[in-house]
Image (cartoon, rainbow, N blue to C red):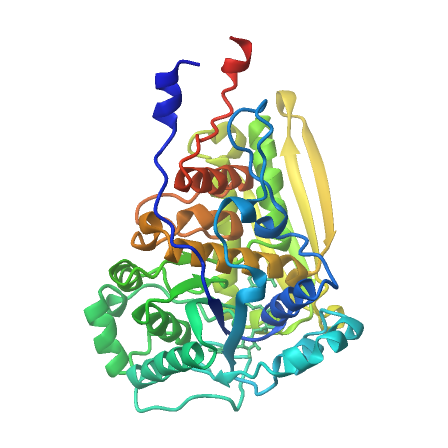
Length: 449
Ligand SMILES: NC(=O)c1ccc[n+]([C@@H]2O[C@H](COP(=O)([O-])OP(=O)(O)OC[C@H]3O[C@@H](n4cnc5c(N)ncnc54)[C@H](O)[C@@H]3O)[C@@H](O)[C@H]2O)c1
């Protein structure tokens, strides 16, 4: 390959501040996902378990040509916080400490939890910002009071500052692991920071609790990752605040279980130009998330997030004869006996050569929180990296983290990229770009020069 061509592809490295000191992880919602994540990190730190499913811990990244033999681990390539430097805190409407919450969530075995009991028991939830109108199925005693939502936001800001001071932290990232809130659409109050602050003072009903946390985080210069399908940061006011305060945002809704499978299978059908008539997905799950999603308002928020995936992958507008008429249905059934061990069935009606129909059945006996925990870890480590990176911290939405989410956030007007493999290339190319390495296009003609 000509040198000029090579250099055109090779960016100059971006300035990245080294991760010194401790990184605080603040989590609104200390239920199944949060406890599985925190307990898992501690188990890994103690050498009792491996961080399987985590790209930051296990993944490698190819640099240069295929013949160069350079494939360092991602965590050795970009300066990520070390697991030993993570400190955890959070909020919940229940008073259970993380050990008790993990026992109730029933995801991890008692034997593992006992080995890290003192550590987990030491993490106690701060009082939450909560509004039952947003999560109809839950109610708890550990809740903040204040004369308006601005006062609640001030209290969360104080929590963040205290947490930072008490644990002598260098940096903090916030990640939502709380329940799915009821479905809402953007209003006037969400349009600008000014409107939003007026709404906080006037207790505007369109400001969800998750937005109060996000506002507090962004005001403190703390990045916010949205693990649920909530509207939270998908509003212009948050985009504005995020850019203004160099506090990155990303989301939304962790891509686990059935949607993960969808974003693995659907790109394959499209790549081979196989048609699709219908995709019926149903789930049974019995954890608290399932109970919350039993409420039609919360389910609608989830449904929107799950349904959007296929359309963006299959692009029916480009392939009307293959994907122009798809029947896509998603059901979630709360079925307590299953606990966190969800079962997701998919019936996929595809068609091939000359229109001949075929069927695929997927029965995924999955563990939701086991799939979500490594995502939480990767997202907080990458968000911390973004906060320390000159080129990323001020851009607001971190689209390069789409890989982890069911409904990836994008710049207004830009359609999201849902294909898991494109998302992975995008993520890795972002890392290469930051470090001034050549982007990998997979062209490969140079091997045949
Ligand atoms: N597990 C997965 O695979 C997965 C995938 C994608 C998204 N999610 C989302 O992640 C979130 C957490 O899932 P989970 O299985 O841990 O649920 P969970 O019910 O076990 O935990 C959620 C916790 O949030 C608390 N909570 C609710 N509102 C709160 C508030 N305003 N402030 C503080 N705490 C609050 C609840 O009391 C509960 O303890 C849900 O929104 C879920 O939809 C989970």
